[in-house]
Length: 90
Picture 1 (cartoon, one colour):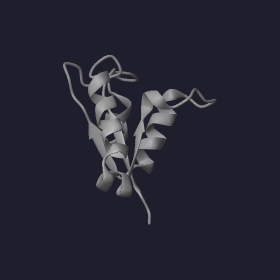
Picture 2: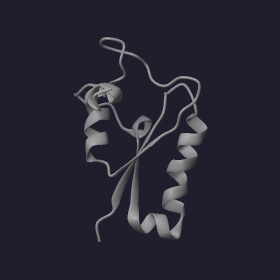
Picture 3: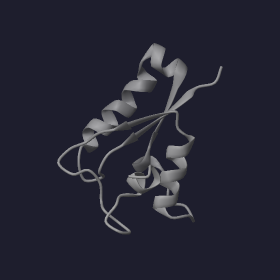
Picture 4: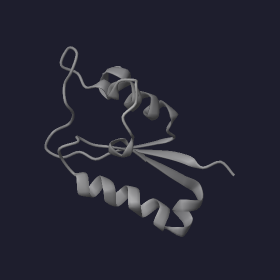
């Protein structure tokens, strides 16, 4: 059976405990663990491609995107827009 991929996102400096709690919950739950795998960006190892490229590639490969919002939305880059907003055409 194919597992669906959940991408958990949030500003790196905020809600770290909450992102980790969501990530840890899924494999610990009998039902969720059967149907879902979780990707948390800060768990990815450094690779030869850019962090932004890795982030966007993983978003594209995901079936579910969970964005945890705190005081900040995202770090603005290139024209004052976050990578995910730019990719989504915002």
